[in-house]
Structures are given as structure tokens and as C-alpha cells.
Amino acid sequence: MSKHNGEKPYMCGECGYRTADRSNLTVHMRKHTGEKPYKCEQCDFSTRFKVNLDRHIAKHTGEKPYMCGECGYRTADRFTLNRHMRSHTGVKPYKCDQCDYSAARKESLEQHMIKHTGEKPYMCGQCGYRTADRSNLYYHMRTHTGEKPYKCDHCDYSAIRKTYLDQHMATHTGEKPLVCGECGYRTADRSALTRHMTRHTGEKPYKCDLCDYSAATKTNLDRHMTKHTGEKSYTCEECGYRTAYRSALTRHMKTHTGEKPHKCDQCDFSAIQKVSLDKHMAKHIKPT
Image (cartoon, rainbow, N blue to C red; front, side):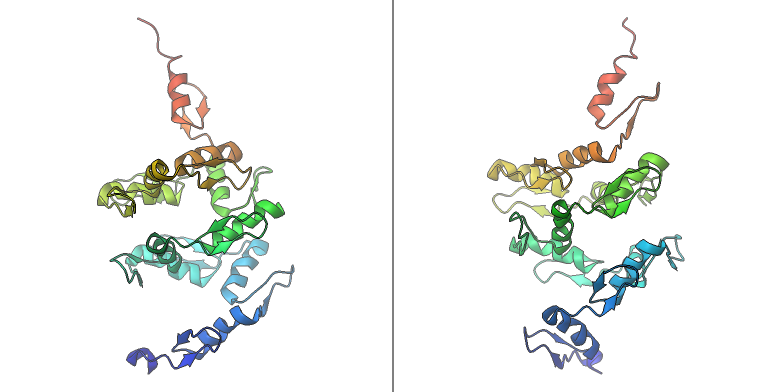
């Protein structure tokens, strides 16, 4: 009944967290106790959540039993499939209580909230790196441990993040599975599709808190903010390269992935940057 009347009778005695579901409280308490009851039988990985164990096990088995009936997308865990389905239904259950923003994923809402708070609570004990996103800290720590768990099965490339491996794989397959429903634009990079969609919506959600500037992409806001701060906030987790611009970091990452997306249509030349392709094309132009 608590789901209907909004009552949350179960409370954490450590931090005041409240919930309508006793099992949610049990899982929450593991944050305080450090308990990780879900153990991998093939390595020493353990976790607080079964969904995390399922996701981890897929690294050993490669199995992806959960499939989307709309588009054929497959995944190793039910939670990820449920989240994916929102891309078809348009459901965005996570609402910002300070503006009209809503999101399909809780992580997206948490990322959005830092625009209001500016908080970066997660800090690396090795080097002092700070971030607003727990997963960013998790990946950052691999720059210290050297761990690169995502392996290419076509060559000896390995990566800190799955997104880097996915981008690298496009160099082997040429596949661009993500499609814009408005104009048919295709890409291998989910963040590139998100940036592209703002062209259709006209949305400029990224606001400067020092002046009245707003932007369609975080990259453009970050570029603008350097005029105020001079900060170089984007760091390559592979080699430590720093830049003020996300786009510059994206280009830089291709030096690690080997990706050369800009292809000459007259020979087999390819380049990391469009400017390099433009210079190359001049060789094909015959002087008049």
C-alpha cells in the first residue's frame, strides 16, 4: 500500500534514507556495512548488487540473453535492457526538482544536478583528481592500476572504458549502429548522436553561471568557460594529456584507438582530423 499512499516507513538509522520497500533498505545498508554478498566464481570480484554481478559475469561468458523486441539490441542484464527500452517508449522517470529537466537514467539526472550544485564529491586518493560522477572516478583509478579490461578480439588493443573499445571497433567493422530518427544521421558514438540531436531540438541546456551564454553541447560551454577560468578540465586517462575542450580530447583519443574516420574518396588515405584530410585533398586538385 505504501506505493499508493507515498508512505516510506523503512528508514536507515545511519543517514536517514527512507524507502517504501524493506528490500531496498537492506541493499542500501550495504553502503554502510561494506557487505558485498554477490561473488564471482571465476575471479575475486564481489558486489553489493546482483545486477552488477550479472554484468560482470558477461565479461567471462560473453552471453547476452536479454534482447529488445523493438530493435534487436542485446545485453547481459535485465536492468540495462529496461533502461534501453526507454529509448523506444520515451519514458523519463528521473525529474530534476530545480528545473524542468527529466532523464531516462538516474545517472543522467545526477550528472545534470552538478549544473545546479557544482559539487565534485568523488576524489582520487592517489592524485587528488575530483569528479561529480562515481563511475568517472572508477575509470580514473585504472590510470593508476594500469587495468585495461576491455580487449579487442581483432587486434591487441585494450581500453580502460568500454566506450573507447566500441569506438576502436569501428576501425575494424565500419559499423555505425546509432541512427538519428529525424534525418538518418548515423554514428558509432552515442555521445555524438546526443550532440547531433540538439540541432533538431534547438535545445541549449548548458548555461554559463558567470554570464548569459548558453550552448547546445557541453563541449561548447566548456570552451566558453575557459574564457573565464583558463582551466583545462579534460584529461586523457591513457597518457595524462589535458585540454580545455572535449572535442580536442575526443580527437586526441583517436591517437590511442587508431581510429581515422576522415577518408579520402580518391585514394586510401585516412586521417584523424578533417583538417588533415583537407590538406591531403589539395594533392588531388590539378592546377589550372
